[in-house]
Length: 354
Image (cartoon, rainbow, N blue to C red):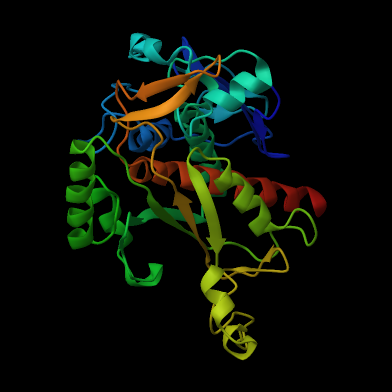
């Protein structure tokens, strides 16, 4: 299976399945001498882990990271950083009923047709559990980037949308509620809505907004490796993501050029930021902001018509432990993937100017 690696200089390769012994990864390209804050890495893992609140999957995993290489006396050595995260709470029997059934909107059918074999236990390699490895690498990338601040939060659940610009919200409120919405009143409404969806045996989607601040000018390349293109690829690689827009996004199509153009200040900054901090594929020093759309989780606790591996009609019904809404746990994953992209371009800039 190809496609297990992400990045060019700061490169992450992940391995493992949802119900295997462990998942893990190898990080290449991290410079030597970086003092790591292991507590900060584990904090990021706690933000993503299952079982953290009533509105997420109740699978109980501590998601403790065990580093195997590339670190000596708390500092990176410049060699490959290997790590594993043991799976300790698998309940593979919860999936025995779908061994020969293709669940609607899952990867079951496409995996089977592509490889001729699939791990039906929790989706195997296609499970969102793989994203825990991305959070580990993203946490290290964040420490490498140091002064660059990456913040994500839930901006909508279903039709409930926080109609505030990122500059109008208090980021310190994000971790004060299980939804990770920076508005207490909206967060409470979203939480109640997600709980009601869970009782119905259904799921709901939403959006995550991400802001990257203190980005230096000149990250990104002007042709195929545009900064926003790489961010888009990173976000669309996350399970359940169906859309990505940055800056003015689709709303920008309703504006005139005279309204949309970002006029320059005398110091080189811009008076507006419809460009989303990126022009010509290269960062311009303004805040980079984008929105990521997540579909409803495909596993629902309701009966659905489907087919089996022989093409016969069958009934699929969700069992086990699943998220009624994935967006609260997706927040640290979005931040992690953003950090991997920025770290890669940051290192590329350093090597191109030697």
